[in-house]
Length: 358
Image 1 (cartoon, one colour):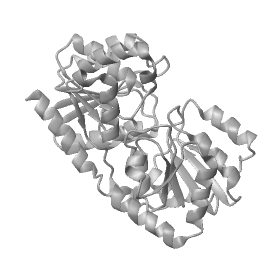
Image 2: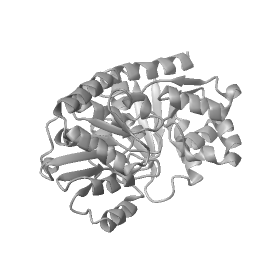
Image 3: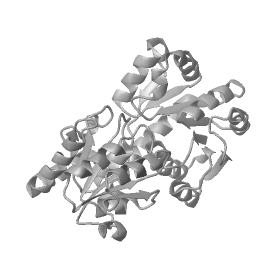
């Protein structure tokens, strides 16, 4: 099959990480796979895909990803004999839907979260309903994401929805060698891997450092539009020596291996790849009690209440004072994570494609 994936950027994020894991494996399975990104900024994920031999088309580096001209640029690319065009994120979803009206190609999209800001805009619902009708298949990455999507879009427009759980390369995280630069930062390292954007809640983690002893350090791996906000908060709380913004990194398995605790803190999630990777790392995993995290962490890792900085700090201290408890949490997390094997995910995606093109 000839398969084109379309995504907004290749910065840090679950959908972006999915491209790194999914596309080379589809290529290895004998399919012709390319990627289109709206923002062609070179990132570690971009470099990894290039190294894997994936051809990347990018529309621009400077203008907005919502530039209406992107409809035309994307349509020109969509016309080039693809069997499947598979979109991720809002702008590619919408612009490919417009492009699909003008060319014959099977459109597929993935819903990567349990919620999004568009659902708060009542006036936008009719646009979304039209958009999703253009897709042969809407893939949701968890049951909760599928339920929320169907509730939002309505029963009549939900017949093309299915669920395929995200997958991870478990062994890559379970046996990684610790990153020396991270290990040298402090005695006890807490790490969060997430984009610096609205959906994520790094401020709660930063505030929690006020309740933890000075030998605890927080590493935030990622980047994005909220970086200045985080830098200001860190400065205001006098935490510059204990909170470290590591930027975009290609050695996440090694960073997690160098950490003592791994945490995901969000306002909502789909099925968080970063969380599954954290649960694979052999470190105690903590997350806040929100949709998309609760489903995989409850009964395995540690849940704390949404936006509860003190509650997170208390949970870390309970782990820190009980080695047996720590080891139990690690075993439970790894037992859960190993079930999300990436090879199963790739096979299910390809099955969807093959059924659509007959």
